[in-house]
Length: 283
Image 1 (cartoon, rainbow, N blue to C red):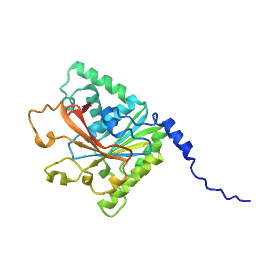
Image 2: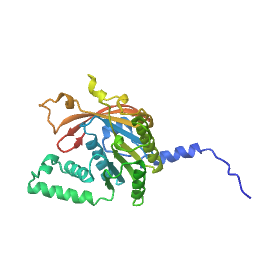
Image 3: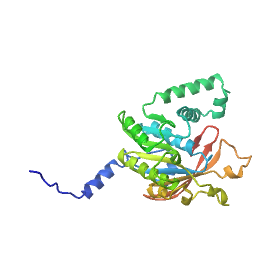
Image 4: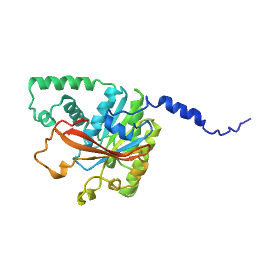
């Protein structure tokens, strides 16, 4: 005889106690304490959007967050780049770690000591079991899902980074519908694999038409659903990108990280020091 299974409500107290007990170990820590003091810590199942105009440093910032996460948290992270090859991303990471300008690496302007430093760091990072880089071959949500599933067989994936959202192929007849679909699917991916998904996003060109060029939530390109689906929205802004003051040291430029949306707490702005030559960020 078949039985009717009775639906049960959630044990709210037990769920609350479990969340308290797991709160610290589930934190996604990028090791930027001033930023975490404002926004708190993303958690598994959440979607974080990093928006900026081209050239602001969003890929460099994402790589910095990725490196800090795998080194300090000792958890697996996967990055999908639809704009650069995995080799280019790896080269950028080695430049930042070694504090040797990327331009010098690409031009081959290296001393023997620089070459040894680069080689040592490259060997160590390439041997890490916590890092996986994918390039343009993964460009759809089903391909993302398959790749994450494959990585999870090697160990729990705590962080997924997508660079960038508008280059993914989504379902729909126009850009608005496609980006809406992609945004929703990224949020579902975070929940499905119980990981934090960080998606980089281009901003609308209308930023350039304003006298105050600091980004706003309305600048998220193509669809308001990005803002709706995201648990956090961060904007990157460098004043000197527009002013182009020749007296500003490119190895010591100020970059503002604005927490424009925080589903769980405060918003606000923190300032980091950005070395444009190596892609390093310092508090």
